[in-house]
Image (cartoon, rainbow, N blue to C red; front, side):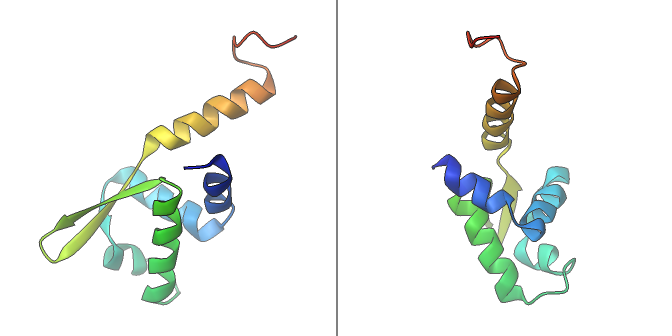
Length: 94
């Protein structure tokens, strides 16, 4: 997973909102789609981009697929941003 894929996935407001929904807990694609005024196919595409960026994981539960947030990738991005801001103890020049 490249950081470029993660940042591209985070650039879209719908995908950011999906991540916010998943923060509460796992949801099916149908449960996610109910909250947006777009087609189920569009939500499926957004979920695919989020999966490719490793921001969400999916798990089959009977006939449904549940999606959940992969917070570890977000933590890596936050650490990188903190380092850029100069708040980390990473040995960079002050």
